[in-house]
Length: 245
Image (cartoon, helix red, strand yellow):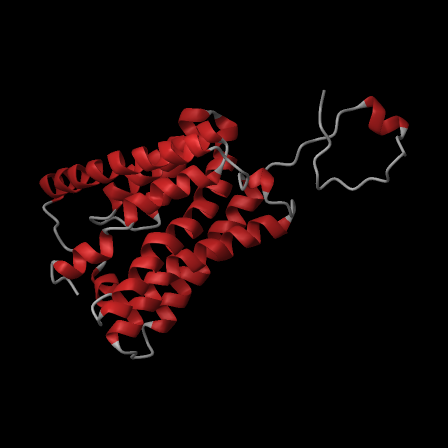
């Protein structure tokens, strides 16, 4: 028995012959949502970043803005995808989940964090490339206690939220229509490619695979956000402690 989606308009008490003879279609994100979401993400993230880099801002201020930009771009892309057609959050996986899935997210995040280090070592062995492309993030956290906290919040909380809403709630959702393996792997590769072909690429593949699979299994973006938070949260303090800023 099909359920009428909550965003489907109807008059109470009226059932037409057409509505009683065929089930109502449950709206789900499709290719247009995915394209619009990625275009807005690119325009806000890369277009905005390109313009900001020309302003000659203080390195700490510039670093903080760039650290927040990925999360802001993800939220903007997600909002554009939602407003395009469906205009409801639930079809995008923004729904309640159980405490069990959140705890699983913590565990998966810890495993992914360990695999992140191994992925970097493999990348260096294959390519010989050790150049860091995230020094600007460390700059954002190198201006004292307040900047360290802000940069950590931006990269450890805002970025996971924005990127998971877009790349799991929209992109993975769209691609899972073609099967679980295709949906998980292809969405992880798209996510990794947005980070560029550099030393971050293999770590983004690890994060993308972990978050896409837990999203597929749980049906909610929140366990994926938890995985991503655990994966990202130590980044800024470690980089600042290592003097990368």
